[in-house]
Image (cartoon, rainbow, N blue to C red; front, side, top):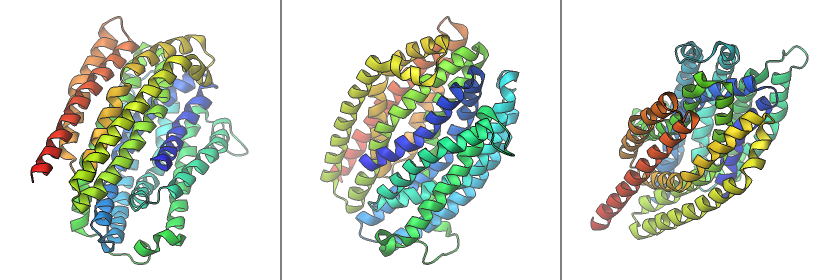
Length: 431
């Protein structure tokens, strides 16, 4: 879990750096980033989430002692990733046309639109990197991914500076410049990981670049059957958080900026249970391939206990240090005051969030993805979203209404996912 956690923190740090740097330009730039990211993140995680299928498939092949399948799975995953990345890029190019329809204020449109056009250029690299990452982590080598992510985090700062403030022939683009910087960075990360996999000794027994077959319909079908529900489940959850900025945009720049600060903080902290969930997917997937049900259940139990401990620590950190954390993002008093208030709601859902994402990670390792997809869709979009919109737009709660809706959705998802995990374990135990 530890190297995966460092990787997740690094990748979440991209958004953190964008938010902090935009926040120190103006509240308008911070709000524009909030809107742009609100549309980019769900699309990015939907398509890269599909490629998470590489992890349980490779882990199962590893556990079943069939290494000859690993290279084939990885190569076919790269084919799928390339196609999905191109589709995602085209979708993001069209997204700016939705902004006026969604009620985004005219003052935010130019920068938010340019951000989306620019960041779309990096989408094929995002999906192919996700496929290579899944392969590397599933065979027990998460550290190269971690190293590349940490170096990329450092590189993003000068890249952002160049495109946000301008240098030489490159004009100052403000918050929109983050899109160009991130797209360039994604391609650098992909080529760096591909080069390491090609040269690294640890990958030679399952080397994926020594041969290359055409697209295999059997493996493409398996990847998509397993991956599409994973991607959609992640999309349903993340989009409910991201689109909240769009729901709040008619209520003013201050509320949107404060919401973006609070979401950014909780997004960084969410990397802890998310990393645990990825580790659980790998370990559960390996035992699933071995058909070692007793060991698999022990790993699940330990994972849920670990998630509980981390959630309690996170709640304490937010409670005692929220003022100091918010001060990192903005010096605007009005934005900071609202952001600290919203972070109180984040405390309320930490336990539920940790439990539901850990349960989802276990279920992915057991290659159960259809059920969790429907659970997340119902929890977030049938229950949480309407509740949040109503409370934000039609009551005095405003931004707090969106967060209450999130708490309701996470609670429902947690109960349903844990119940499903319990039932599947019982069925395997009887088999």
